[in-house]
Structures are given as structure tokens and as C-alpha cells.
Length: 224
Image (cartoon, rainbow, N blue to C red; front, side, top):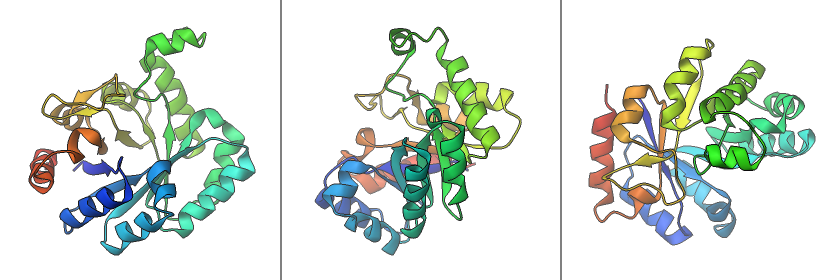
């Protein structure tokens, strides 16, 4: 069964309300730099105290030793999942993996806010799916647990990468609403059908009036 990950793209007080409203459900909560720093890390403890899975999404991309130490810190705070940019390269990824114990390290390929026009603007003459495949193959072959990709690339990746891996899929539309920054989107049903392992939903979900009811609807969709 695919897991539902809720991106807490909001301020500390609203994040606390969301966590309280959704207590008892089987969810992953994703924390990015804004919420982490604005809450001075407090929100991380709240997520763990309520028994949810914790996804620290900082998309680490730095010199190898800096990323290695960052992964050590993420492990110490009890994160279940975190992210690194595959473009950080072989040495950086290898150093990150040295610190991996329980935290799954997921490689970022191409952000869902980017498309072929972006690739062309950077001088990269490739289709999105081939570019994503190249990065995903590199990261997984080095030992990453999975990749972040759009729902549109899941099938292509799973057909062409034989080693098992996790697909973390943002850019999910729900009720005809998607994140404003997303370009390569799919629906919840499409993501499930294509074999997503973790679907990530943020503003298209957390601003809804009866959040718990809406989340339970999505969990029903994701059931086998």
C-alpha cells in the first residue's frame, strides 16, 4: 500500500493544529527548512511524540563531509526519511550512506516544478524522463533507498531499473487542485495506479476545511 506523506508547508502553529487533528492515522509528515527553522526544531519532536513517521526534506547538496555530518544529525533526530540531490555526485552520496542506519535516504532527480523548458535553458538536451532515469539509475546503483520523481516517470523508472527502490511522488493533484509550483502533476488515483510508494501532498490538501475527513478519503483510495 502506498503511504500518504503530508508536507507541512505552513507555519508552526498551523502545523501543530494539523498534527493534532490527524493523530492516530498512519501518516508521514514532511518538514522542510522553513518550518524546521521557524519552529527551532520543535515541530520534529511533536511529530515523533505523536507516533508519526518523520520526513526531513532538506535536499542536501554540498561537499561530501558536510552532507555526511548532516545525515548524522538527521539520524540522531529520528528521521525516517531524508533527501539528497543526486547531482551532488558519487563521493557525496557515498559519504551520506556511511551515516545511514535507520533513515532512508532518497535521491532528488528533477524537481516537479521543472520541465523540459528548464532543461533546455540549462543547456541539457534530453527529455525529462530520460534525464530523470539517468540520475535515478546513478543514485540507486550507489545505494540510495529510492528517488523523488513525478508520477509521470514512475513506470519508466521501474521498467528500466531492476534493483528495488522507493518512489516518492510529489506534484499530486486532488479535487482538480495541485500545488501552484508544480508542473508535472498526476492525481492520487494515477499515482497509486502507476506504483508510487509514497505520495506527497501539501497545500492542495492542508488548506481544506475538514482535513481529517479528506485525509481519510485519500487513505481509502490508497488501500490495496
